[in-house]
Length: 113
Length: 116
Image (cartoon, rainbow over all chains, first blue to last red; front, side, top):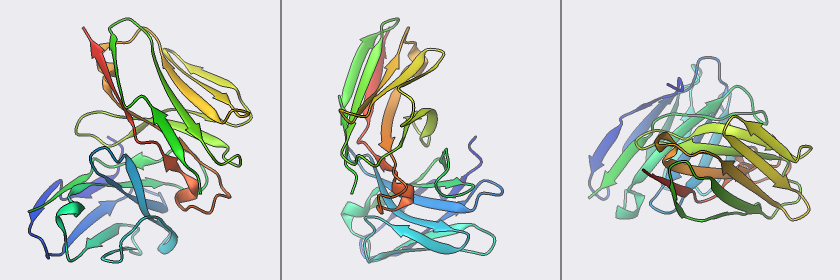
């Protein structure tokens, strides 16, 4: 158990809809990262937050947004969903940026029909 | 930005044999090279990492080697066991890459299959 909690584990929705994925980082971890894992595409970095502030952006679509709250949990919002958004979405955390190991949650599997 | 290539995409070895997974990176400023293992239904988990001031690191049956000149690094697993079956990801990181996420860029993964 990495200590990172993601909900929901599975989500099935329709095209055009909006969903919110939630992540609770390990206790005390200030940095939260979101990754998308599609078939054969490896881990694509989406966005990073550090202590409530956006730190870096990767290949995140404009239809996607995220935030980190004062209690350090984070939410990833996906809107106007398309079939191609079907993927595993991982959250990871670590204590500070630029040091050491990323701890990943077990992921939220999104299926868009 | 950094680009990490990983080969092979699938590797099947007999139990007890060795497995080698190779990665190359493009950014000469990269200085941290972790390897993550992802078991079915789980998130990736760090198994070993190496920094650019070291050429080799071992931890029991796994080892990582780094060739900074050639910009490649490899994961070696000896005496493979069924529980080694998983997807393995290499990554490269440069604090100064500007690519985000502390510059951590992942390869596309290798599906390692251990044949009994």
